[in-house]
Length: 136
Image (cartoon, rainbow, N blue to C red):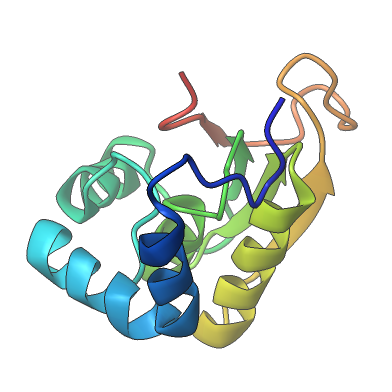
């Protein structure tokens, strides 16, 4: 299994450029593809995430579980726009660290746990809504 820093042959220069200019490159991509300056790490678009806010009736006081969150998209966004509390879970620590950074930056109420979808450390009925976007 490749490491978290695995770069396919031939992409070393591109990967180095992305690491050196990470935020500007991410902003350009997010702006061009998703229409936002916020980083979008996945296939769920901002408009789809906003539709989840309405569909799941997210608001302050609602507890949202994100299974397989990666870098926290879209759960940090969902918590930011709705005021709900997100509980962000995934296995790779690198993604959870990025999700923590985004949540702190945005002033989002969130908790973080390393967990799989089949081994969640929560009591039944602890959440009002669950998402698992971009997992498969």
